[in-house]
Length: 261
Length: 240
Image (cartoon, rainbow over all chains, first blue to last red; front, side, top):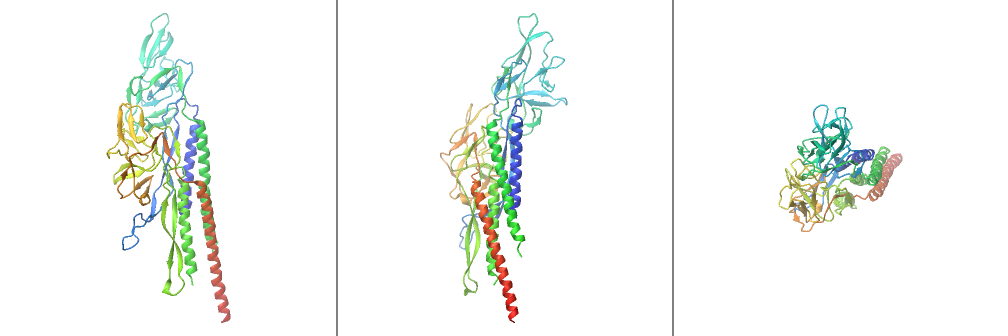
């Protein structure tokens, strides 16, 4: 029974769909998280009677062939890089990106990773680091005697030192933009890595054309829309049930054959 | 004498393939741009020896694709496009142009607009559509024109065919045909949405129940026929 394995492909596809949706829901409050969508495609077809074949010597063309499909496959689980909401936090080292671009983070192994989660902190040396303690590139050090830190929309980090009136520029935050940000590989911990599909990272100052602007004392929330996720979840569950129904139907047909004397 | 069995068998074979087709519909109920298929049956008349009554076998002679548009599903992805009415997008493959209604497009590393399989989407000039590097926002207008803040990039090729039923389904949402494409002047392209599959699960489920019952009825008929032949043989041998 071909329908048995076709139903199985359907169940597997819906399982992946539910897994993607549940990951979105689990990350609905993750800073800078981008929701994902599972995309499906039909599998190959078996030609039992080819489209456009002739049915007589006179060249009569069959109006439609018989092509039986083999089910469904997952084509892609792609990230939807829609801007998330920007929520003020009041924390001076929280930075949200409004527009395209990613912060560059130096991993312990020397590689560069990219993130939209701008909940930064200072480490013991006064360097701006991510929540995991990785350096935000280019390593910007805040002097010990700084009383106020300002990060302007163009990424300049200005500090006001104790006893001084004029703020001092201590560094410039840069953002990386990609030709195809959907192609970045997610490695967890809000981090993404460059891949051949994403293209080469291009660093730019915030505020330049095509590079987003920064917003201090705010964070970008995840762009998960909980209502649409729950409705997708319900429809995925129903689709799963219907595919299991296909399997039980095929089973009934096979059973009636088995009972044949 | 065994013709009853063969006729019943032809029915069962056809029903089994019909379930395969319906299973494929159900499996693809969430597939972008998928079109439900329906089996067509034909009576295959035969008159053996030109003397007996004619017998009618069942033959599944074709599949019809329901070409009605599927529901629009909003994804908010700027590169997702759906065709609200007729038409197919053209994509480039090694074997020539292929056609698809699965509009979940993406940009590849060369900034070319590609479909879910990574095949470049063709413009009405039969060229690849390349989004300029400085562009931040891509807008696709109602007639398929791709725009950025830098200006117009290209217009997507949206075509239709004289006989859509004669397009061969290749899987992966692609179709192939030898027919000459007719370019649609005013396609209805919706941005930020994709076309869902037009499978109606309720219809598929009820028809599947029906098919299963028909299959079982035929089975019963085969059983009955088997019984009849057996009793006949027993009784005939007893008389002797």
